[in-house]
Image 1 (cartoon, one colour):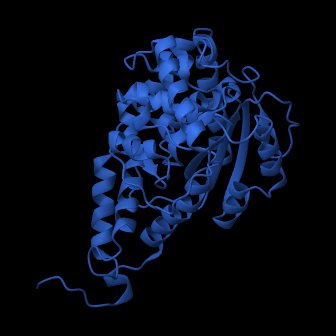
Image 2 (cartoon, rainbow, N blue to C red):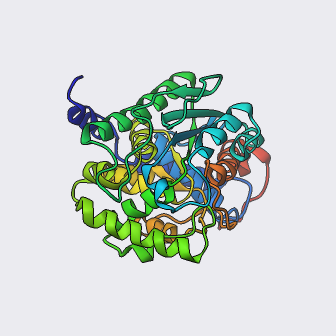
Length: 357
C-alpha cells in the first residue's frame, strides 16, 4: 500500500476491543484455584487482564520477546545529555553481544531479544537479533524545526509494526518494549508535554544524569521546540514528526501491531510511555492491551501513566531505558500467567474450599 496514512488507519482498525467474556472466564478460574480469593493480588489481576487481551481465558505466557528500538536525535547537540550521540550505536553493539543490561535481563526472564535500528546516525553492523530498518540517520534538532517529515514519521511507525509482525510469525505470547537513543528523553518530554498539555518543567527530568545547569537548558530546549514547531495534540502523527523521535514512532507502531494480534505489551519507562500516549491517542482500543512494567524515576513518567490510567508493576528507581524495567516486569507477568495456567483447582487437588454450603 502506497498511502502511509491509509496503512496507519489499517493498523488502528485491526486492534480489537478488550474481550470481557474471556476476562470473566479467567475470573471464574481464579475463584476456584487452591488459594483464598484475591490472595495473589496483582498477579490475579494480570492474568485476568491478559485473558481479556488475548481472548483466551487461560492464556500462555512462555513465548516472550523484548523488542528494543534505537535511533539518534539531533537535539542531542543542544547540550541536553551527559553522553555523546555515539553512545547509541555503542549500546546497540553491546545489546547484540548480549552484555548490555537489557540483554542480560531478557535472558534472565526467558525472553528473546530483537533490536531494531530505526535511525542510528552511526552505521551499525546487522547481526543476529539486530535488524537495520533506518528511515534516516537520526532526527533533526527539534530546537530549530521539525524532527522529521510527516512521511518519515509514518515510515517509522511502519518499521515498528513490521518488526512485530515478523516476531508474531515466530510465535509470541508477551511483548516488552524498550529503546536506545541519546537525547530521547528530551524528545519524549516534548511529546509528553504536547500530548498532555503540560508545561515542559512538569515533565523534563535528568535523563542520563545531567547537572542542574543542563537541566535548566533542557527545559528551555523543550519549551522552545514546542513553540517553534507549534504541534497540536489532536494530530498525534504531527506531534511525532514535529518533536518526536524515530524510535518513539516505531514503538507506537509496534504497540498497534501487537494490539492487532491480541498480544499484551509491557511498557518500559518514560520514552516508551510517550510512545504509548501517541498510540492510545490514535487508537483508544489499545489502552487495556498495555501493562506498565515499572515506574521510572523520570518525573514525567508518573504523569504519563496517570493519563493512560496505568499502574506500574514495579518501582525500583530505574531510569536506564533499553527495556530494562520492562524486562524485569515481563518475568512478573509471565509468573502470573504460569500460576493461572498451572495451579490446580480445589476439585482437581481434592482440597476443601471455603465456599459456604
